[in-house]
Amino acid sequence: MTSILGISAFYHDSAACILKNGEIIAAAQEERFTRKKHDPNYPHNAIEFVLNFANLKLSDVNQIVFFEKPFLKFERLLETYVAFAPKGFASFSKAMPLWIKEKLFQKNFLFNKLKAHDKDYKSDENIFFSDHHLSHAASAFFPSPFQEAIILTADGVGEWATTTVAVGKDHDLEIKKEIHFPHSLGLLYSAFTYYTGFKVNSGEYKLMGLAPYGNPIYEDKVKKIIDIKSDGTFRLDQKYFNYATGLTMINVNFINLFGQKPRNSKNEKITQFHMDIAASVQKVTEEVMVKLAKSVRQEYGIKNLCLAGGVALNCVANGKILQEKIFDNIWIQPAAGDAGGSLGAALALWHLELGKKRIVNPKDDMKGSCLGNEFKQEEIEIELRSLGAKFESLKYEDLIIKTADILLNEKAIGWFQGRMEFGPRALGSRSILGDPRSDKMQKNLNLKVKYRESFRPFAPSILDGDISDWFEINVQSPYMLLVANIKPERRIEMTNNQKNLFGIDKLNIKRSEIPAVTHVDYSARIQTVNKYSNKRYYDLISKFKEKTGCPVLINTSFNVRGEPIVNTPTDAFNCFMGTDLDYLVIGNCILDKTKQDTNLKKDYAEKFELD
Image 1 (spheres, rainbow, N blue to C red):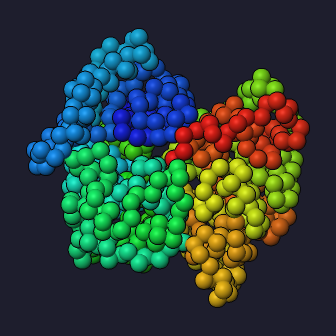
Image 2: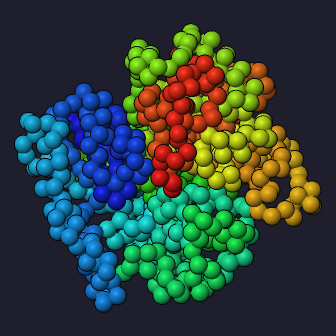
């Protein structure tokens, strides 16, 4: 039996995964354990978890692989400094001490960290390094249901590459084309994330969610700073940016071009200007991704597409690629960002370096992305009692019936079941659930439970067999990474007066039979649920459908704004007691908020740093 430990760390979303004979056994992000969102530090807790889950000591592990190559990254830093000198001295002098102390000698640094896990681990000869974009591409192709595929990876930057095209066949994978730093679609999107007052490497999905409230009236100005060729390749005009040499994303030329200073999220409201900016950069991003997809389809003639990298989390752009019918099939790695690099590095070592054959799973090899920890019923009850929680334990069938009844009475539920998800999306294991038919649910969940901006949309979880009855899509979307429109017959058309409302005022208009998950443009970020990957969640939605005729639930991640998704029963109880959630369903235990000791209430609104 060959075991491989994959690690990603030191930028954002540190994570670890373990393979046994090429099978994905466990994977988790460090943030879930430390409760620090996007934690970039060495993933000590995540490594401990995956080793324990796999019943391995570190000294039992055959290979350890890191998701990128530090020497190549250092080369990029030096060459960028030389190219822009003396402009980049501030950022260069800030970065150097850390590089010299830790990153340049990362093998030794990792070895010293790894020794803390196991006193019998004595040699660094089994530590390897993968290329950043190869790790992303491997994470997308090798677990996919395809024998052969094109893999398109787009993110901020790896060592040098920011966008790559690879071709995978059987157990082989080769990167064919690259776009290099400083030309980066991910960094362009992050620049506008910063400009609209959201946090870089965290708030990009907010920019995507804001876009439908605006009109892309600044598209031409965005295209002044990105030159897009007919094949989707691009170059960014560096006179508008500061990320290559400075400590911010943009400069005064960028500000002058668009005419306003960056929004201060602490004291400036979101205006129509910010919505229009979001709509404009989103439209340009979609154009780049669609053109890239078309050109690589034409060049290589392969019918399947895999997507990875942070830009692959832009489910609206993914939906546009699907809508254009460029490829017969699309599969997107659910942990598409840097966390998934730990998995990709391990899979690349297994298939490419060790030459191991690949058996393609027609469903995919990600196990529904439920790769984190889980708790037995006895463990849950012991933990809840120690917290002073009041709960009742029900038989499984009774639990499903009661939970469905609570949902149809417009109550908000914290749902904690099975193994935790790997990646940024809650997929029905660590979720907050609600009735999508309620026209009050979106606003109430955002403001009273999530403590976040009211414009933020929620996702519909729908039974896999019902998707084409409700949405204009006929493929599965198990990882909530595709956006599609709700079917016309399910919509409630807006009046002319309603269409003329300002931006977020449109939020309160009932737009469909399931208004709580229908965005202002009649779109939704869809998750299809099947019995194979999450039986409990499937059974709950099925029971809700049986009672209401609606095969859909609201699904949002079980956390508040700025908090990582809950990991343990204690995390879940704390979040339950710190928000206006009505019920908590955890294992076979059900907790009613009205029956809890009020002294256990938490002040959660200010607990976590906002993102």
